[in-house]
Amino acid sequence: MITPRHIMLIAALPLICAACSAVGPDYSRPQITDMPDSWKTESNWQVASPADTIPKKEWWKAFGDPQLNKLEDNCLQDNLSLKVAMARLDQALAQSNAHGAAMSPTVALNAGASRSQTSANRPLANYAVPNSSTVQSDYKPNLTVSYEVDWLGRVRRDIESARASAEQAAADRENVRLVLTAQVAAAYFQLRQLDEEISYVSGSVDSQEKVLGLTRIRREYGVAAESDVALQSALVESSKAQLELLKNQRKQSEDTLATLTGVPASSFNLSTGTLPVKTPLIPLGVPAKLLERRPDIASAERAMAAANAQIGVAKAAYFPSLSLAPVLGGYESNDLSNLFSVPSLVWSVGVQATQTLFDGGRNRAGVNYAQAGYIAALANYRQSVLVAIQEAQDALNNLHGLDAARQKQDEAVRDQNKAYEITLLRYKEGVDNALTLATVQQNQLAALRVQSQIRGGQFLSAVSLLKALGGGWQEAY
Picture (cartoon, rainbow, N blue to C red):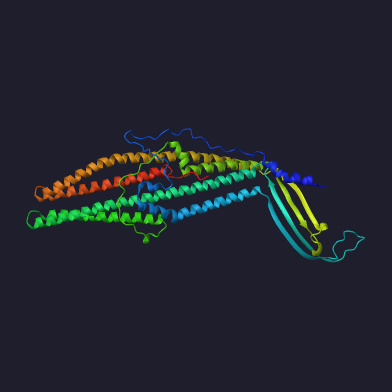
C-alpha cells in the first residue's frame, strides 16, 4: 500500500537528482595563448590615448558629422536586416525559455463526460450470471502531473545549450548592428569624397572653359592656331566626361545609403558636402581586448559553449531516463450528485524508468556528432580571433600608409597649383603654348583628385579600424 511517506519520497526525487552533477564536460572558455602583446605600428605613428579609452556604442559620433549621425540613427531604426536579427534574437530567447520549462512539471486539467450502453449479448464473464444491457453515465474530472527527473543533467545541459544559443543570437545582432553602421559610414564617406572630386572637376571645367575662351580670342587675333582651340576644347569635354562619371558613382553611393537606411532609392536624396577636416583619434588598446569587444568573436565563443553542452545531452542517452508516471488525482462517478464525494475519489502515482538495450550505434553516433560539432566550433572561434587581428592590423597599416601619402600629396597639390598659375601667366604672355597649359591643367586636376581619394581612404580606413576593434559593443550577458 502506498503511504504518504512514499508520496513524499517520490515528490522529493527531482530535488535529490537535481543536486547530482550533470553528465558531459563542463564548459570553460579556451585560452588563446598566441595573442600578440601589441600592434605592429611604425615608430613615427603615435597611437592615440585619450582619457576615455572606451569608444561609446555610437562610435560614429567620433567623426563629428551631424549628417552621418542622422543616417546612422535612421539605419538603426529602419534597416530591415537589423529587424531580421532582432526577430532571430527574440526567437532564440523564446526557444531558451521553452527549454527552461522542462525543469518544471507539466500539469493538465482533464474533464470528460459520456453516456453509454453495454450489450446484453456480449460474452459472459460468468456462466452462472447472465448479461444484461446497461445504460449509464460516466463523469471524470481529474488533474494529471508529469515530470522528467533530470537525474543525469540531460535537461540542464539542454537548457545550458539553449541559453548559450540565445546569447549567441544577441552577439549576432550586435555584429549585424556593427556591420551595418560601418557600411553606412563607409558609403557616406565615399559619397563625400566624390562630392569633393566633383567640386574639383567642376572648378577645373570652369577654369578650362575660361582658358578656351581666351584661346579663341587669341586665334581671332592670329596669336593662337586652330589646333590650340581644338586641344583646349578636347580638354574641356574630357573633364566634363569625368564629371558625369563621378556623378554616376555618387548616385550609386546615395542609393546604397538609401537601402541601408530603409528608404527606397528613388525617393532618397542627400545634399552635397565635404569630408570632415581630419580623422578622429582612435584608441587601440591591446589585441587581447578584441576577445571582449568583437561581437563576432563573442558569437563564436557562445556557439562553442552551446556545442559543448550538446555533448552532455548526447551522452545522457546512454543511461536510463527516469520520469514520474502521470500522477493522477480526480473523481469518477455515474451520477453528478455524488461526483465530488469521497467514494468517487481516484488517484495514482508512480515512477517509470526506460533504458535502451540496443539502438544499432545511434547513441554512439550522436556523441560523435556532438563532439565533432564542438571541435568545429572551437576551430571557428580561433579563426574568428585570427581574422579579427588581421582586420585590425590591416586597417592600422592602411591608416599609416595613407597618412604618409597624404603629406606627400599635399605638397604635390601645392606645387601643381603654383605650376598652373605660372603656366597660365606665361600662356597669356605668349611664352608657353596651349599644349603646355593643357598638360599642366590635367596634372593639376589629377593631383587634386588623388588628394581627395587619399582623404577619403583615410576615413574609410578609420571606419574599418573602428569596426575591426568592435566599435562600441559591450557584452550584454
